[in-house]
Image (cartoon, rainbow, N blue to C red):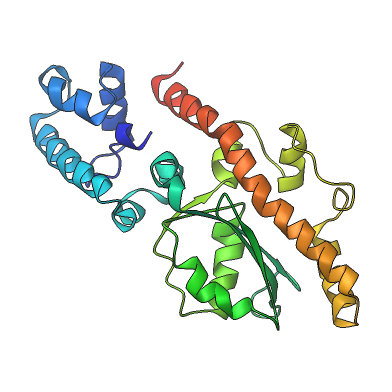
Length: 253
């Protein structure tokens, strides 16, 4: 999808992008070969041609910061397939909803192979180095919650990556509600131990751990691991639908 994207080029909006798609020459290379037959102003064509040339160079270099900066935030998902070899699925647990009055208890990071959970008072500080290793972050409601919460506690982290907050593209394809509700709609099963756990239970489990229950911590970590692993399952199941819906909406199908 990234190589059919034009809105990251300065001065090029969705209207021009739509016209390119309507021409049938969606891919960058297709456009360059057939731009004379695409009905858009000549001044825009020059800008697009230069933008494509630079974009191809940046993509070949895996310059994630370039695309993170120039892609509209709501469209970072378009880069997923090109940067999914350096992805972190991220989810946090906290003692409350406000970063100013609550704290992070657990941060889960899953790279598609290994799921790690970092715990307050044990190894939570390790996320500072860990998170900055990735080119792409995937979360659910992370733009409003997880990443700002992390940034508040660890201001030294520079979130310069691409970030796919799945909540928004999922809404575009008709999947709204919380993460657990969406999992059920997609047929994703949780274990018997965690199926009924909510965010409020996560707070309760943390307090039980603070009172000495290691079993409560184990259950909290299992719950968090399922969150991050399921994020990968969700995006793999829905990514083709994101693309289909984007073209349908733009082309009025």
